[in-house]
Image (tube, rainbow, N blue to C red; front, top):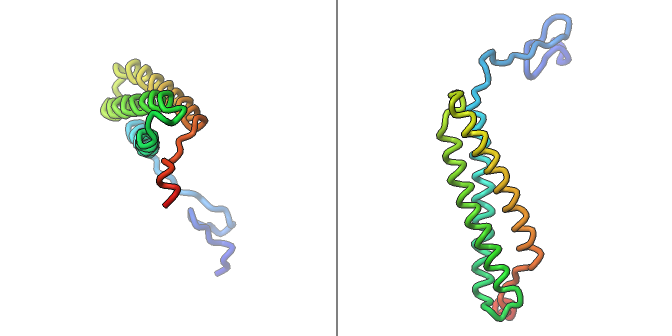
Length: 141
């Protein structure tokens, strides 16, 4: 048997043409939306942890740091919006996409979530631009 006749993802026939087997069931939109929301939530958690660490570093530096107040405000806005997006994602996952009555609400909620994520990204660009540095005592050790 020649190895050129075998296909990894299907059945090889005598002519060398492969037939790829795919499930015949329709796409479950709830399953897709849940996976998408979980992935977005994981990214949100990573950013939440990064912002918490940045907030800790700014608070350790104290008001002596030149951008203390703007960074506290920006990090607080980012953290608040991230918590809000997390709550919105919980509602998106809980609601049934197959229920046509919920489509309007889900559409509004998904658009709001996307807008808040965009604002979070912009706020975090400014947080990065202002720079969060470790206190000088950490550098001496």
